[in-house]
Length: 264
Image (cartoon, rainbow, N blue to C red; front, side, top):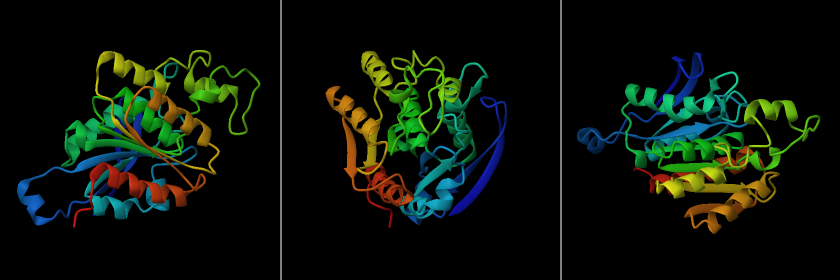
């Protein structure tokens, strides 16, 4: 197992960026001889977090080794992994296209859509849903844990309003015109509709949220939408709160769902 911290100049971010990486390079002999490339997971942190969160607080290193999957963990800048049209700070493009292209050039990972996954928790769960659907030609699977699908809640928020986490100014800077969020490319529902209209493949989706999580309502709402649209997906609603205990349990479950049985 190789654990790395890598910096490079990002054209999307217009500066040097840093991400963490886990590479289970000590492959079984039969895989080495076959030259089989690794599957990859682009794993996103939550609000106020960083690219070190998953390594610091979860069992992702163990799971990367167990399932023989490369894991790349960028920073989301508290921007919900979206592109900012005004500042041209393109976090969505960075995680959905540029980082994937960079890591494919640098590491022995598969270039196939079915071997390329995106996942995250809270803000990162939203980022995984949005970018997994927006870049559906790149990602074959989406893992969304306790997703902060606040596009539902910030739509139409007015100046002076504050929801206890952030206020109008912040959400306006991240999501743009808040009167236009729903129905835009920042709305997971709209992205699903566009893929269906175009006849494009929709990534397979795994969603999980704890019954004591303050984000349960928006996760359940997206689940109902996917059911109504006939989009196959896995949805787990079990005991738990917005905590690493829950995410540690569900990331293991999600990787088994994604990859299958661990490599022995």
